[in-house]
Image (cartoon, rainbow, N blue to C red; front, side):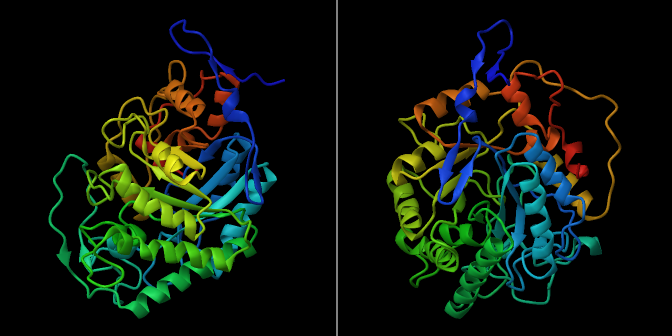
Amino acid sequence: MKTTSATAGNGAQPLDVAPLFTPLTIGRLTLQNRFVMAPMGRGSASDGVLSPGYAPYYGRRAEGGAGLVIGEATAIDHPTAMHMRTSSTIYGAGAEAWAKVANAVHAKGGAFMPQIWHAALMRSPYPADDPKLEMANRDMKSMGPSGLYMPGLIDPSLTPPEPVQVEEPMTVAEIDECIASYARAAATAMAIGCDGINIHGAHGYLIDEFLWSRFNRRTDAYGGSLVNRVRFAAEVVAACRAATAPDFPIMLRLSQWKQQDYRARIAESADELAEIVEPLAAAGADLFDCSTRRFWEAEFAGSDLSLSGWIKRLTRKPTMMVGSLGIAKEVLEKDAMAALRAVAAGGKAAAPTDIATIDGPPHMLEEALRRFARGDFDLLGVGRMMIANPDFANRVRDGDYAALQVYRTEHLMKLE
């Protein structure tokens, strides 16, 4: 019989982690526990097709106790949905590779969702120094609500530059084409045996660019007011719902922060957030993936609720809380981005000379438990610590921290 009492450090009373190991049913899907491997790009695909190492990589996280595994962002079949050729796709041979991932995760007792995605004007309009980092279909128009571009920041402390116009705004016909492409990806995910989908609506990609007033300067039905700026996202969700079974779970990822501006906000108050998430829930989103940089930080003044707590309160839909669980010291984004670029360019990392392990429970686990007990979220997304530790969930369940490795950017250099 496995214990569900995790020992707190420094002689403190044990942490009761049993609530995180209870099932949750969403539509046709029943998860065995509340731990989720959060989506994190690994940049190891080739011309849109996952390498053979992905299926066992994700399978190890399911074997290690993750009730749900969410794959890295995978491009829909729009021609400029992906950026570098090391991005994955969910059509043709790309979909066949994801089917193998779903099978591998199922074989280990977990559930699997791909994260369907359009890179939008996170695609660089400029030639890459390294041909391996060149944008796919670079000669074609990149999509964006207003054709604006800002580079992804390698250091969150930097003040971002003003966006520059590099393309013509999307036409209504192009908007319709992208919506249809999301719907085809959703239908494909269901057809190849996935247990649901995660729609990437965060981090400065296409859906998020419509939500963000700094990037969306349209004056038609898709721009201006929040009601208009959320229209594209709601139409994507509704199209995915129409393309799949009524009980096929649809998860939508949202964030305030962007890769182009870590201090960005799409909602300055709970009322503004309601204007965004309520139409998305009505369109067919079953649950929300609430991406934050630190889950314990308050979203708005006057309450300690984080993004997941607010969205659950406003929509009455389940939410996933994610943001640096177990990361005791903030890992510099510039190091992470440098590592991913090195992977995409075919670089290798030397093995670290020492393997650091954590002392006591993962950082902020007790705070996560407090928020879970209060009803702030339903699923706990773990990204970097689950890259470093495939068996993270099982070790938390058993209170066995002795071999849990501290996350280091070197972990991004290997798919293992």
